[in-house]
Image: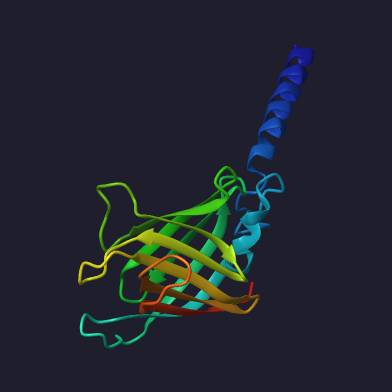
Length: 195
């Protein structure tokens, strides 16, 4: 009986150890925001400066073109799916919260960002932006008409990324790349929290 119990415990320990590598890059006590999986595409590290928590100031435009008062916000980024993707969430002082799932496709060599918000719970497919890191900035696009009906894109850009924080801007542009019309509608500045 003792041998069967020892064998059963050995089998159980082996099974648990075999499962652990499938979660070793997930958030944990030691790594609260997870870690990039070394077998993921190198681009998984594009968001490394954002991983963790930042205190941010978020400001949006009013329909008349003026800027609203800034809203305080916590922006948290972490690695998910065992270090193969990035998730972020915003917790705003005005009670409107949002988040994204960010996956890099090695086949298309592009980031795909799926956005969701408490302000408008989605009953349809989530809006998706796509793009890459270009010249030290992460630039993402989604087709979107301007209020006047003109074809164009909504462009999201992370820039001035460092260990101490980053900036973000959402703007309508008339084309991908060299846009001749650029109209910012949302801007965020973030300062990294001490870990």
